[in-house]
Image (cartoon, rainbow, N blue to C red):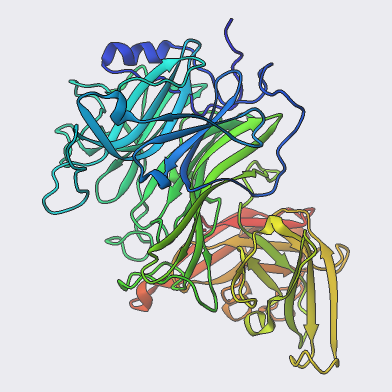
Length: 590
């Protein structure tokens, strides 16, 4: 009996070697990782929405479902990335050791090292594992990587086992002896082009327009390509790191020449491509693209940020010593990437690894895999996994401070002091209490947020001070005032473009395309990420505007490359909804 096909289309690859096997793959019916199969769980327990540590020491997670159980695997750091560990879980809760796969033991002729990013998929008869590694003669030495004498690079291998078994056999190359995209050991690119070398992070998508295989290839950084399984010769480059907006010869600061780890899922007739951007030791994070139930993903249709690295505004944290730094030019504390999305009971859960950094050149790393429930906005875009936009109306002459109460009852006072906030009536919290020795606090740990204000910024004299607490539900936005306050109140929030030292302005566009510019200028907006609009444009004479005539909101970011040369401006326009309590503008840069 075939398993019912579900709405999540990730982790369905059953990869064999050679062209005939690839064509068989295109015709094979594969299981998906969706959670609505009759035997998907032995209990009614459901994972909570909060960020939860699943396995310490694991990176590059992959979650799949074989018809009876969920399986979790990834890059196993404690082994020196020489073996693959696999865990089972009946309900996405506790994990239990299921198997260990050592390619060097089952292959009598070769050993393997730098084993990264394994992916397990299932058909009705067998399970397939694909993984990235360097292969060398048995008993030999692991080849050096990115060294002057090195002639070899990492590439992708595959092995199979009967369905229900995790006893995977000898690794095999993909499409060996062909001119198709394939396993490719040499450091140099194949004659057909660098995108024909399947290097790392393979994944499969099955959608309304056919089945696709995705992978990461190397040239001038990390890129993502894909091809239809029934036409593997039709290779398409899906993700190329963006060039710098101000300097076409450089890369976009926040992408750092790296797009990798593609992961595709579907929800409510829409396809999502989630991927990692940036260097793991710098501005590493998650972004995504969207498409209407098709594989027509394109950055030109919009790049959305899913996570923001945790930087320290006050130090410490790790700092790269090579002068390159990261786009914030601030010490790095924590970041996240390489995800796998799975559906269970109508909810979508994302598994990802979190890196906590320390020391000079960010050499110290603690890595672990976490699970968190995805939350979707009304328009289908995904809420940030890390950001919490805190917004309130400006109180003239007041200085602000933020305290947080954790779910365990602990108060952190202040989490963000007036030394950072000043008189700015908003704050984008990304996971660190900068005024509490840079204590890491994920937003899902927070129960209550308290806004304190002072007339004299002294905080100890008890004069002209006030505070109010607000319950927090775990989302990415919290208004720190009564909803009814003000006329036509709406909060504008946004993510940045990823350029250093950018500043923002806000314009309003009427139905006749006339523009109120600026509604809020750089002095009003500064480097904030939110603005509370109550029908008044503070940078316009008279201030008040006819809200009924407003059709669009335009946010503009201005930055000069390395603070030299002419400044360039990037704008994004979104519809103005008079009934909305919040309008979000994603500039794509985290």
